Length: 432
Image 1 (cartoon, rainbow, N blue to C red):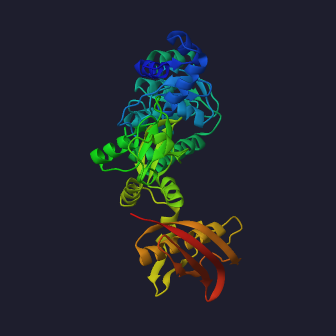
Image 2: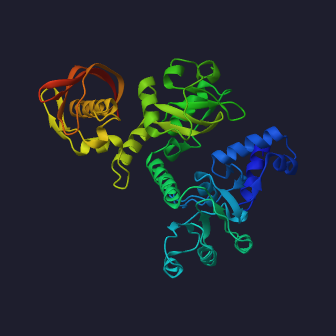
Image 3: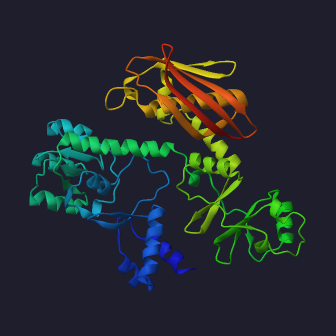
């Protein structure tokens, strides 16, 4: 086992909430501080630890079923730029819910549950009640609490914190953070779909080894790794065609292949694959091969995400809510009124919203013509004039050139027959 692996296993064995430092890891594991630092950063990327300002690096709870909406008390503390008054050992815990303390204690008692966060002003009786109900406390307005409350918080390992913001601002900040996490969960990442432990070839393998692997797996594209498991290339059927079995793979492979990281979005990955014309992408973490994703995996994931009823609505989907789509002989027409969320800071139609409508209409036109999703390659706007709230606009897309892998289009936005925006664009298909 490598030094890096030993440190990761050591971190996994620590209790949740344990504090970790580069120096302590280096001393306890007998490694250099550089090795300890790299391992801790790797553990942080894997969600095993979190580095929290003013607190330090702590071991996290990594339960698979942890609700994505959950925040730790330490994260809540950072969001409101607060101070820890007591109960440091409970900072790593995940808060269940947050409760606004604008009520009497007898009413609040009905709502408080284990690991809730009570957000309240300078009310000592509410601090006591929260701790009795095994809840943390966030005191707004910059107020302090008594030594008795601090002692009780330390004994119960529940954080008591304060911040200078008012109660409404604190609740808004935390609620926005939860919503942000839910939006991120809706985004499908490469790590969600990658094929782990893929078939690979070593730099010392031969074309004969490639052909044997093809017979066993029916695949023709493989990552090539060195003796340390680091990616050095990709080999495909095109690379080894007409070569003798004895030829070494490292003399034929494509070096420095395009790769993605595990946190890349599937949409971005699809764009890379279409743009570069490649079928598989290795997934790396600091040159370490985690797995691969294929174009088929990416397309399935995009369609799966699109069909999930619980997935949050995107800006584009919101734009289409008030629009009607009509098919024409040459393409697509989209009609609708300018809504308030489509305005810019001076009260006219946002250029970005209009450009998004153009992109949406172009995508609909390509689906009608070819049955494929697409990525916009170029978009050139060569005329634009302002529109106002309530104006009825029409977006017309005309496909001027339809190729096997891409197409060119002209798009016009009009308002009561007057041209608002004209654009030319090109797009590439995402083929199944």
